[in-house]
Image 1 (spheres, helix red, strand yellow):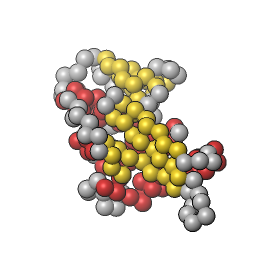
Image 2 (cartoon, one colour):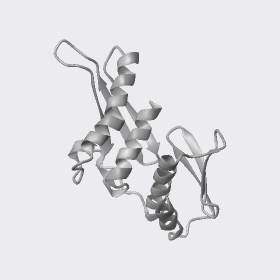
Image 3 (cartoon, rainbow, N blue to C red):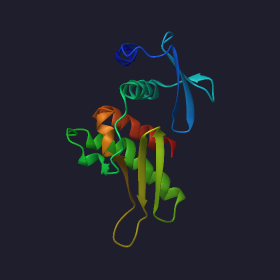
Image 4 (cartoon, rainbow, N blue to C red):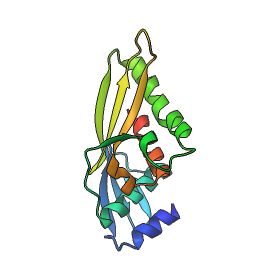
Length: 161
């Protein structure tokens, strides 16, 4: 957390910032080192706060253009050792939620931040295969977030669906 605040402060941001993250608006006070959910007037949890701070730092530097190329987590380089955690934290919860609530295949794009879409796909079980899901990211996300951040971001998205 301290590292994220230092990185943001080095970019000379305004004293306070506002950012939409998924379906909530957050107020960020650089001077007070506080990330506050506007809707519930409560501090963001550490995972969300770090992702928000990293996004704001990338945004102040200039976000890359969307490529329009959707990639799964497995298609990123440098993910060795992360996939099992990604599947457990992100894919499996989506499968459980959709299996309980959906009787058909489904897909949904979520704009987690401005300029950062995430595509969720779910396939219902059939005679040959069990239910499955995947999360797709625009290729540009790797120029915004590190691998660990992508796992955390996807976990936060999976928890909100």
